[in-house]
Image (cartoon, rainbow, N blue to C red; front, side):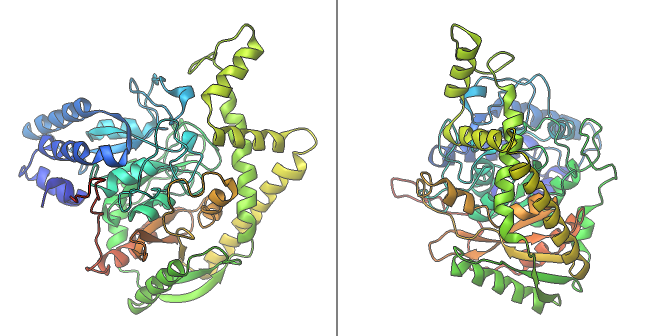
Length: 494
């Protein structure tokens, strides 16, 4: 087995015992990037020299007997809306195409301090607005299970990097499903932590009351390791949770087979692929055999989540993206007066989906409409939170589909924004409620692409998610492939 095919746990053990070096591990992933990247296009910016420099430093420290963290020397990829000092951070937008941040995000500071080599910055939907990574200003990322299909979004590049073995771990951001949906489409474990669990400092804002950074991994243990490293209080983020994070690996290993799990009944199941529902029921049956109690749970306001989200998120985006005016930083469109400059800058710098959401948000916040739209959506959000609070009085976890359908074809929904928004319907209410949610592989669709199961827990109970996900991982069908065999256009396979 090649190094890029090993788990993070295995890589950490091999480096700690000095059976392999961090440079060897990092080079294995860089070689894999060179092999696969031309066909899937997961990275906006490649950083091989930086990665090898970090890996070499880790090896020297290990040789000198320094005590290092378990993830020291393990490479990763980072979504391109997370600030990296001195390294281009574009948000996949023309308006920030040449922006180089003067500071690191808190998560990047932790990663650098730990000694994790950075392989590069990954492609995404522009400003994290999208569900397919087709809205990138630069290029479309392809799903490695089927190169004609989308990888999901907006963190599609990060999902593809891990799925193909180009990175053992990756960071994404999730506002309304942008980690969980691509994790489902690419056959990964993708976590949206509790709002406030990981610092948002340095995450370029889309919708500040919803945005969260989270990990992608090939298994629950690797995902738990990265969350454990990044979780914690940050005084630079006013929404950061003040309490210390628990040991997620220990929580994952504790037998909690007496947990009561609610299987989610959607008020409206129109648009749900039958194979998606079958996969969720099959996984529920597996957990029941393992000793978990399974019963049906209903969140009464689920049907209102999509409408509330697509008022709240664009409203916050309209406010957050007002800073891109061509004056302070980023692209400047020029013009003979201030109004022309603003118009040219934003007209040329933003893509169609970003413009659409800015206009929706600006309208919802405008005089005479604020109470009718934004305020009412915030009231619905409160009711949705109450639904979760009541559900978690009876259940320890909730399970349901991670997406209503498998991965769809590139271009299939590009001209129909409503259809694209509906692909997030499974993920939005968790985001509105601020609760942690994990997408886990639940089998394969007959079209040859993965299906995902979504696990949701009460606030700050990520350990429960990993615990149950570990049962799913250990009981996965050995006949099903864990990674895609990337089918190259000329007909060959890896």
